[in-house]
Amino acid sequence: MLMTNENIKYFPHDRLMEWTVLRFVPSFVRPNHFTILRMIMIPFVLYFFLMKQWDIALPIFLIAAATDAIDGSLARVRKQITLWGTMADPVADKLLIGSTVVIFVAQEIHVLFAVLIVFFELLIVIGALYRKHRGLYASANNYGKIKMLLQVTGVSLLLVAKLAGFSLAVPFATATFALAIAFAIVSLLTYSS
Image (cartoon, rainbow, N blue to C red; front, side, top):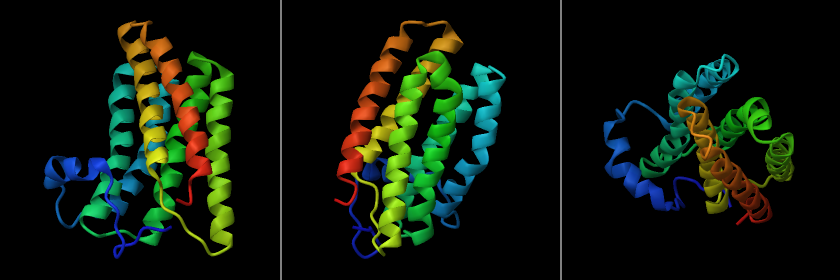
């Protein structure tokens, strides 16, 4: 079911975000501004990955990923959910994670992980487009949010491994991505819930 301003369902992190980060977001800033910011940041994230400037890649990736949590919580807490935001937010997520996975995870862990992650992300997009074509809309579910958090954690662990030479982080990143793939499957199967 599509979440609207009339049937808002709060996620566990929304109240935490409201009491911390959202307090500092001016009232004129809308959730869609954060989604647009994430889209604008993607080329910069990819540039620093390609240049192997890990000290810049890590914070800029984390900031871009944080805009995902901020825009969703802001939309729910301030009752500023829009159809555009509901559609654009997951696209921005998939562009950020998908491109990062293709140019970084495939190289640092294994191409198979990158293929599986991108494959399930594409299946989720195809499913959403199919439902939209049928006039049905659905908002993200808890499994999708956990999947995104795991993917961000996996990329961050790999970045820490590169930045600090902490190679022990790579097996943890691999396990995190494996878990993210499992949550992607569950998210795909329960997307309309």
